[in-house]
Length: 388
Ligand code: GLA
Image (tube, rainbow, N blue to C red; front, side):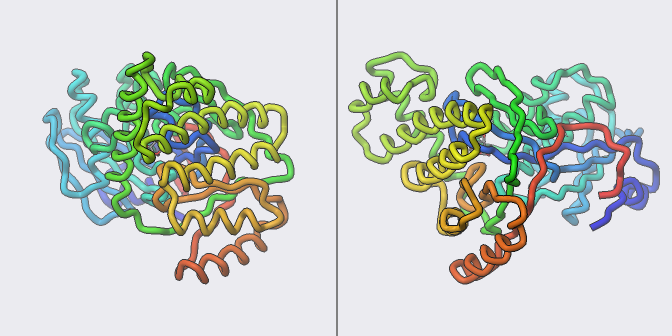
């Protein structure tokens, strides 16, 4: 699809856009469901993302339009607003509310969004639109926030306004992404390192299960609560702020405090997944992609059996990858319950992989998955390339 966002902006608003910004989506290479447990995660930005064209107006209104949705939303400026009926606009509204609460004066702005991240696919379309709004307004009006402040604001929107008790990984990843690099982020201290991703003879494939998300948000919040329960139980004997402060050895010494099997499984996943990220970072730095792939499979297995956030669709994809000779690692990425898997696929086998996976997936699930070969892209920026 070829879209000229400036042209579309002029059609919608009968005036010129002043600036167009791009913000990516993300995949998480490894370290799943541990950001809210103070763990180490390894996401990277992708080249799919959200574009936003903006122009200020003089009528004290924020107008939100999107080429992906029909509904246009209007909000009076400088009023801290409730949620709007049209879901997608809540993300930019939430961000503007935070800016206003912070005492920033922004009069009125017309927005036109366009995104090519499949929505609800686990590639962070919501963090992308949050950071897209925050970054665009901060840059255009010189509001003086640094990148980490924007990340924290976007996370507050997600937690307090949207109601998902998510960690900081997605907002951080889309805001700090760099081409061909992964971010190794400690979610407790927010210290991070950019690591070169040299996949050698492999490419990163993203497989969207196209499974509609059902109950994903409530199940997500349930997992967060289960981890808090585990933390409370462990704190009877030791003092911990986050589950990921535990090494596997220390966890073994105190895990008897958790008698409920489900809670124990959740905590076991968290502690071991955190260890896997340390090992994966070492493997990537040392160019040991086979080891990295092995850790991806182990991560998926743990998310499937201990954390129970996978599902038939994601498992079908990962099982196919396990049996396919030219994939060395695969796992679900993001929150799970559907959404996307990622795989390290040998170059030259893209077409064959897509064909065989599609056959197998349709056979077992009844509708096709979508397969992308992904590039690791840059974080938010002003863009003059208005054709998508
Ligand atoms: C979602 C959340 C993140 C993270 C992942 C799972 O993407 O927004 O904070 O918890 O799920 O790793």
